[in-house]
Length: 457
Ligand code: ADP
Ligand code: ASP
Ligand code: MG
Image 1 (cartoon, rainbow, N blue to C red):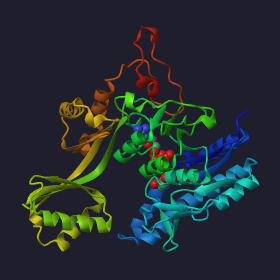
Image 2: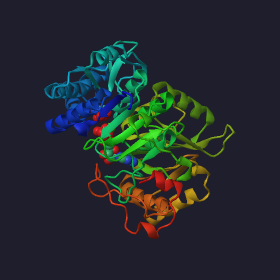
Image 3: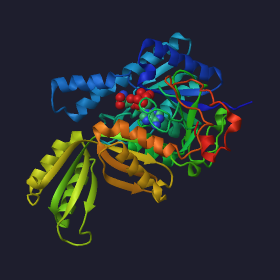
Image 4: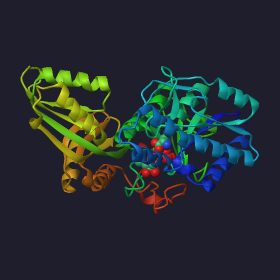
């Protein structure tokens, strides 16, 4: 008989968006308990609630105080934790809800984008020992420096789930969401995607930073650092299709009676992802001295900016640089350029907005000679704008127009996926969540599956 496992289940916004969904989540939590597991639940705000709170804040002030904005945002998760607990109690499961600070989540002081620095799991352990189900409000913690409530950045409940799983030594962390796992691209917008049965942390981390929001990128880094196996599955069924994310050395999910063999190096790509809302600023004839000063300022403010330096490398001569930044930090950067460095002539700054970054992720992709060529050819055939191609070992990224992103993503996905021997796989159809997809007909006629096919359904 299987030993009792400890599982952290994180329910995302769409999984608690309505009373019916909350009741269904409670039913799945109860079922996991009846299967002999201990369960700790983490919840996001009900779908759309965080956006609504942000809208309210901006209706009251254009420049909200960061501490108070976090105090407001924390209420979204607090509400759903209470509601899920009520539903569990109603179904006969003794449950108590906790805020992030009550659950022992301590962070740094950066409001709106705090990092978890410490988790004290004692209170949750006491609850588990009593046989109750703790339901923890995700996305929030308490600043060690100030004691104020902080939030972890958009999608941050994933990180709460992983951090609690690590601190409690849980067998794995389940990410319960509105799709049945991690696919080769966003199944809502790209046709012909495949679901991975398993992914390595490295692949998932690259997909997450590239914009695949199914997992917050901090949560993947946290999972990798602490060796937490992740199981991504649909809220419509606890037993249907899923994706395991792990390090490949252990059989992730073994405690859950499931195992998998990751074959990251055998598959051509892990996926394609995009991020829009970017702006590019080119500064002409800027000296190395200025570049260093600018970088110092940006680092001090912890502004998210990516720098590309062109030309004249290794000399003190003036050269051109390009910065890429999220559009919500444009004002801040403009002010910074204006006050800190009179040496930069602002009329020499060229801004381009409405940009997006398209990334193709695959282990070793940057070392495959044909990969950048295929990417650029695909973008050209889609008539999409393209600039700043950036190659790292596991990722190719290129800037394109926001309006070009959807078509470009589809064609790039088709291009890279066609490298696989195709038909022996399951494909996602219109109802992506929780549906068993029939295998393509004619199994016998097709070629031997590559290792990649074993991992991509
Ligand atoms: P939750 O509310 O459960 O946290 P999110 O909206 O944050 O859910 O993340 C799930 C969404 O991520 C899916 O609905 C899907 O549109 C999107 N997504 C983007 N890329 C991928 C991908 N490669 N695989 C699966 N889902 C993806
Ligand atoms: N509610 C927060 C958000 O919408 C956190 C989360 O959903 O994980 O970003
Ligand atoms: Mg999310």
